[in-house]
Image (cartoon, rainbow over the protein chains, first blue to last red):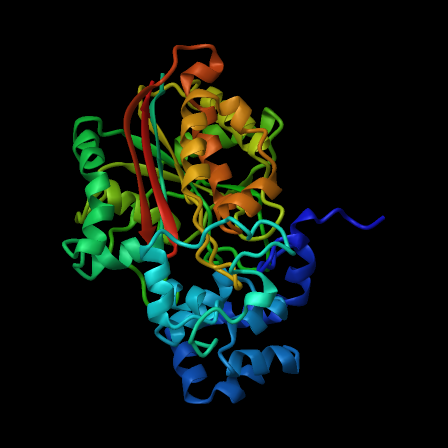
Length: 145
Length: 283
């Protein structure tokens, strides 16, 4: 019997459950390796060569090279692991989170200062909030780090 | 005997640590956050505990996907500060209380909570940011800390109900320790925030404030809130708030004592992506 996953109808959200975790194991473990300064230096010197040391899928490698965090998450990435990748590129959590909305850094920061994204219209897929599929992308960002 | 004198609750946003470490506390954006902790810093000087039992989640720091313990208690003598990708925070090393931690582990496991015991763990912003917020920039932390790591990164995290029950068991364990220690229990993380996907940046002030109200006055009712409500209303990472229920479950009123005194309550949006909440309850 399939497990009940009521969180699958939350718009603009991927819950990192055991299934995603299995899918993203090597992608996340690669990110984990970036907690060591030597590895960060090797990765930055030649990203592709460093990625090729890991048994990741080609899609996972392309997502990392493209610095596209939504694509990384779709491929099984977890934000707390991807944060190491962001930090390696000198990005803060705010810059990382913002990149996934399609907003520019400034647009996202301004939204947060105004009190953040409203939950209204963003609880369930099919409503009309700004996180819904038909409102993407939300601003003038490039969608990558 | 050891006593739990108070519980304290706070968000543990990494950018708060960065703002402190980079000397940005006087910038207007950060001043609004730090002003909410001025009372807490004064209060801590007057109510300095011997030990803090600090509930936090490891953010893919000491626990990679190689293993994901749901509840892990630090039983080591000391803990190094983790390099989370931008070098370790310039804060003092954390000293544990191995004897009390071992006592709690034995008591709580015999009370049917299957803890993982951890003797080697680097601690990340989840643990160090709360210490910085309440003690400021110091050369050494003024007390021992028992790190208690809850899985907050891989769904399903433990339920609010389970966390609340665990807090009650931790209370029994601490209060059966023979040394006369003053122990505080801290619940950290939250409040509403989402760090991923097109819904990133979600904040729900109304829900957060209701959470604070209920944490104070109706913790048993609050413990019944389902995972999906946290995700929908407080964002995918807002689910960290279940950890506050561990600290709340350890308060005297839950074991039939008088209600706690609310010493301080603070709420502010934003710190980076997150709604900051902070509460001090005294037994």
